[in-house]
Image 1 (cartoon, helix red, strand yellow):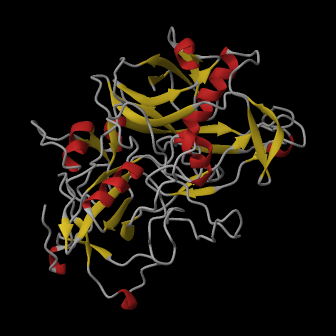
Image 2 (tube, rainbow, N blue to C red):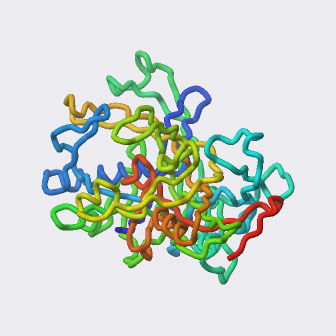
Image 3 (spheres, one colour):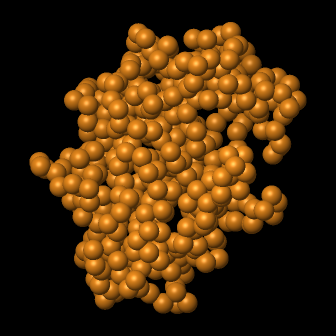
Length: 440
């Protein structure tokens, strides 16, 4: 995938849908969600290549049904990010939720508990408790450097002190007052908007920082992003027509995201322990009806590929039935694993607006509002064997069984092509109070 670095030319505005009137500031200074960057790249491609061509036209889904006409362009675009990138080329990633200190040693661990006496939602079996004394505040930073993340995953020991940063080390929040504009007339200070003001928050990257993104698109046998970025290119990112300069990052054979574990998982009482940490948010919608062999599912914090009653993983170690039939191969077998615990911070609101094509097949308008599990959420699994643990890791790691040359798995039920649902695997141990011993 193309590594693309975005340098803002001014402050950026990423509104999350909350009001911007009275004393409410709109919360526009949050780190941008993956769908914002995906939309920016789509718009840039439309501006750069205005004439329709062999750019992977795709159909639009309206009210749960796909249109017969292929009207949407650049259906092959896939993106990931953004992540903070310092001028020395260091990428930073969201802090895993099981870290509470300034070290990379997890301090929140699953503890054996009486499931019937707890308020844990199905299908979780164990509560997660801290090994530290109670405290009002956490010393954990919000961002980990690539080397710190690799040590957290147990893949290496950093030669120097791990870098962990907070938001204020990467960007500032600026507050501005604006005058409300009438949508119909485009004027201010008259009619219904007379005397109306609003306050807003804006994000300003500190000097030496960039938005690091990954993007790919194949059309007419060539990479559209390579053509787009032959020279530094201006791209509109976020709201209020804010502009970033996009440049190709250094050419590398491997994507600069942390590589997850594929083997050497700890064992406890004949169970192999694997945890999955989200690098990017994920969306798992509720499924209310039973159709196409899909059972009802609550969604929310619980991945749609987890059985909502017993926590069984419903992923397979090969192609699904339809793909196997198309490839004339044997379908994969279900991976024998179970979700037993999770740490899920409060959700993020994902929404937006579609311009549409102005017809009944694609009317445009406000997009559905989804609640996404934020990056850093941790899911704990048990498997029956080391082989099954490796198969589960290959199904959950963003790079699959590869060495990290491409994104293989996007485990979000929605918006995977926009970069949602990228995660990495490591191992875990039980809380010391549980009395459970682990072996390597």
